[in-house]
Length: 89
Image (cartoon, rainbow, N blue to C red; front, side):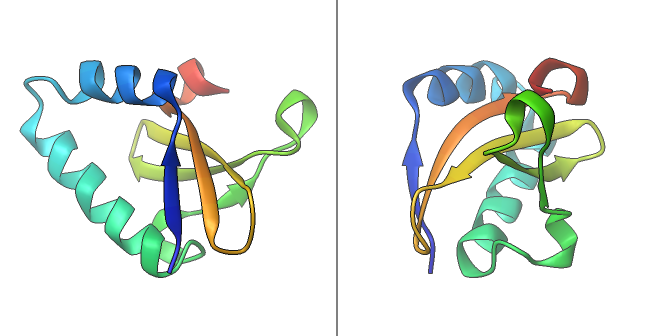
C-alpha cells in the first residue's frame, strides 16, 4: 500500500479546488483510495511525464483535473500539485 506525503502547496491548492465542489471532492477521494491500493490502476491513467517534469508522474482525477506526484520509494509518494491540465503541466 502507498503512503502519501502531502506537500504544503498541494494541500492549499487542494483545499481551494475542492471548496464548494462536492463532485470533485468525491472523485478525488475515490481516485486517492484506488491510487493507494494500486498506483498503476487503469482508471487513474497514471503516466510518467517528460521534459522539465521528467522525474514526475501524473494521474487523472477527472476529465480536466490532474495530480502531479513523485515516487520517493516503492511505498511512498509525494503529492506535488493538483489542478487542471493546463495549470499543472
